Image (cartoon, rainbow, N blue to C red; front, side, top):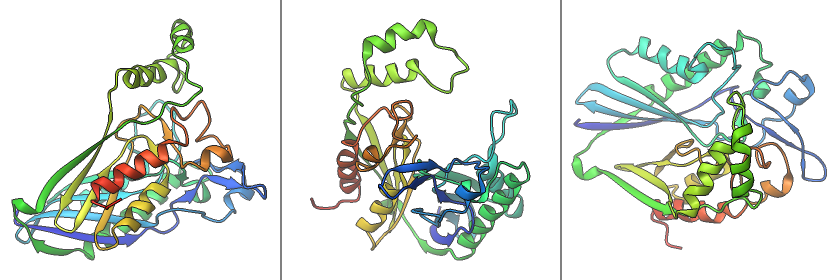
Length: 295
């Protein structure tokens, strides 16, 4: 590897915020990834990060690997019994066919409260439409890439250990008692929640990490993280290109912002989240440490 490159592009008509707030500032509707109700689809996009980031590695003028980052729940329809990488994986495959020389890797950003629901009513043909839109942004980001020479000194990994707060509704003995009754077709349940409780009781930290590539930083984060964390990380270091990959450690489940736990909604419910609003301060502190922000 002699060079690295950074490029960005705006993704059009893919992401929208899942949480629709009412006049009382509480969640009145959830715009899931497939939303059949046209009234909910018609709601504004809401808070998203429309930017896709591409970080590439080169052997002089030859691209060796292209890593892309975008925040959106990565499913259009599911539970069919047929494995699929869904629209982000199809987009990555399209780019691999268009540009076969490098390895293409795609990372899902902080998309815990972001999905394609505004632009997807669940129709099967929408999977390819979303894939084409995402592939278009991947291509535009690559075409806009500016390359620069790098050496080993320009590459580094940095980690931060954090202790995420257990949600107060998690009761170890209740989870143990429920184990014999857990149905393996349940999306999730007592085994994974108990696993997270036991890890926390044993003092096992959650590891956040940061890949540095010259003036680019890639944060690797846990859980289905709300997009506000990604936007906050970018705002902390406007002098750098900051990208984020979430879903790395699924123990916490969904991780909302502090205020989100007061607003209700599926993502911060007892079923979906194994932490609570205290997680925001912990994670923001970890992000600041990784980005070398003096606090």
